[in-house]
Length: 241
Image 1 (tube, helix red, strand yellow):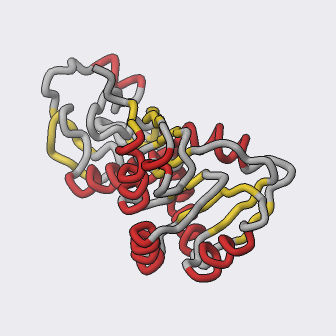
Image 2: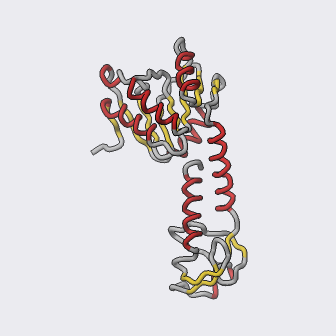
Image 3: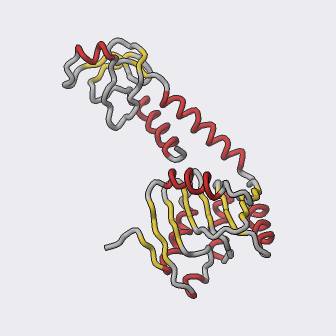
């Protein structure tokens, strides 16, 4: 059974759900967009919660009217590309390639197909940012929520610095390259301590993350609060990089 493909009658609902479920960012790449009542309600809710949504549309005789609605009224970023033909819908969790423009009437009049793909972050970087938005004809209309986008990106940058910083040897507290994966902690000792320790529920002295005293075993090299912080940082970075 094919599970990743979406048929015509499924596409509109899936795209609306993708917009509604956005937490970090959403890209709607659709040459032609026609806002029907249900989509209008979904976008109004997204605007009220200051969702960071970018619409990428095609330049045509109706694009100015659409820019007025999406950018001025709702506050979303709009990018206009002269000969855009790609249809792609993406947020931090999902990526949907489709033959369908964002038209409600398409499900009544057209035979369409969509396909979910994995790794939306890779698609965002390699297809949207490095290919679509790099088109020389692209004209950008910044949204009202750019300050919020920049705040999130600053948090991502800070989280990456933390995850790439040095950790602590759990035996001697020496600074070492970290293994900051709280789900599968492995090498949490410096080279000297690594070779002199038998790894079977060995007691540790220091938290691998913060370096403070920690009475635990190899299976739990982090304080509870440190584990929660690391999960938060990793989740934040995962959405963007």
